Image (tube, rainbow, N blue to C red; front, side, top):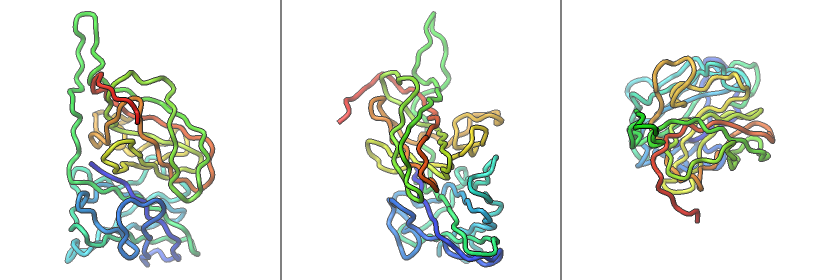
Length: 282
């Protein structure tokens, strides 16, 4: 189980001078503590971090529980108006960073533009485990039939919402093809719009954690490897386990953080079909 939050603020130039990147950005879910986040009792581990800034140099994660060791400083990061390809990200999903619930956790960064500049950082928090896919994904043919249960699909969606610059904007995805009635596990995702930086899923049922990742702005831009259940150029199934589950008639919304009022969005949801159980939307 995991959940993504945004930190963003303008900081002065200075490649070796760390300045705080404030939380919340917009539409925050976890509690604020000073200019940082109060570590959740349910999600007390850092699973993933990604920084984007036109001249971002270093990214630093800070919390008192990290001492007396030095704070975790991360480089390289994404320099420019979007994530680079391949993206510069920090994936701790196989060895998460433990924090103490209710302590303050802060984000600092440096940049060397020569003037003040806004930086953007996504941090993903976890309960410490990757939720396994609840069915076998090794699907075999039985007689002349292939069961859909356990099969992987990448379902493409589009939307035409007008995003709000500098804020999380919820978008309702419209799938190219209707999903087979039943129950699905979301196991990876890709989201694209002209100025999108990050995205997260907004489930229509509990738990209301919003797992997310790095968005892209071009068709040939790569996603972080574990953000997809399968990705071109990586020979094995990777992923972050099950992000959330949903019935086909109540798919999650997609929240997008973009820097301009984009009006066209699209993406793919990596899904595993779990079975034919259904429920009515409320």
